[in-house]
Amino acid sequence: MPVNSDWNKDLKIKFTVQDPCQLVRKSLGDPIAEDLRFVVKKVVGEENFVDMYPNKSNNYCCGGGGGYLQSGYTEARREYGRIKYEQIKATGATYCITPCHNCHSQIHDLNDHYNGGWHTVHLWTLICLSLGILGPNEREYLGPDLQEFGL
Image (cartoon, rainbow, N blue to C red; front, top):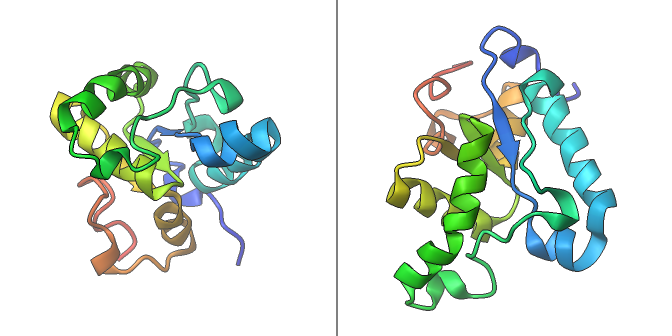
């Protein structure tokens, strides 16, 4: 069964996506960013996707990669990440999809630190949710609107 967005037709939950630096800006560029958006739109619904601006190869770094998460400079990392926080906040999305683990950790932390009001979620989590195979123990980062959805 292919992924689909039927689960979000009535819920109309809004999603944005982070373009990982290593994959998009530093290597494969806009073509892989377009592929990422193709998958995201298939999973959440094109009408429920809100892109950040700027995006793709011009998107801002989240500030968590390259070992910065483990560097011990937490306040500096968060201040650098404020640009990403403001960018996500401007979308009005309820969820920020992060295909990269470093981005996930940083964006989750930025949300908690600055009280962003969104949920940070891995792309694979939403793919599994759309397929109806997301287990109860794999819903830690989902908001209350989706924690028990489809169980």
